[in-house]
Image (cartoon, rainbow, N blue to C red):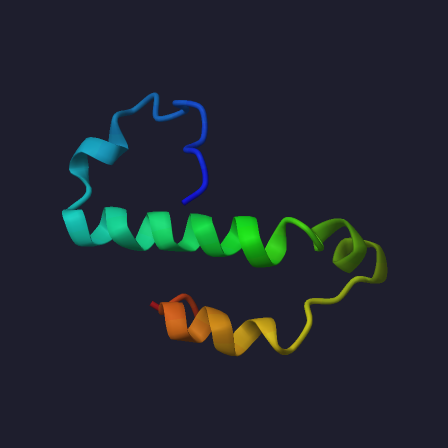
Length: 66
């Protein structure tokens, strides 16, 4: 699990999240640290997001309209 971000929760929104929402947040943070951050500069330079990332985001429940 990556180290948590500096406390930037100035409005104490974290206190309003359910345990399930915190778990989702932490899961997405870990995914981002592992699969996105190492490559984001290169992806930005070429203006693309690799297709293989989208199904992974879908499995996390992070794609589609809500």
